Image (cartoon, rainbow, N blue to C red; front, side, top):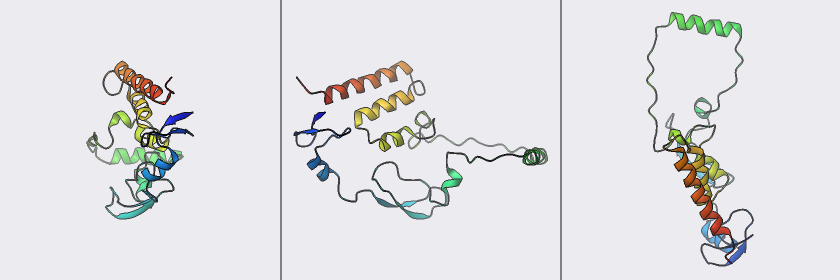
Length: 171
């Protein structure tokens, strides 16, 4: 499929969903951009250097030591009759403790984008989707979980129609 470069205006053949011709892509992507970064772990406060093969996706929030403790994917553990009995005894012996639920982080991790195993933005970045298609995914994923479901689906359709009109050759 042919597409017009958003930077120079030249027409080029699209391999996946590029917005820039190969020459402009080189200019728009500095060499070694985003491949390593010094990060402070949100759990323990230690700084560590994280390296990536590609400059896409989010940077981790936790150091390698804390990651298993705070990972969203639970570790599978077979429970034996003994471990179940130990839990029951422990629950009976220990006084009830009130747990206050963690306050939702509406800026960094809003609940309407964190319902599955991965956040919507992580999927969009991993797939390297352009702006319009990223919004299509965003509105479909959150439909019915933030505001009106039909309104979100109409917004997704609006972005998809706009993207289709952008990539279609003008006759």
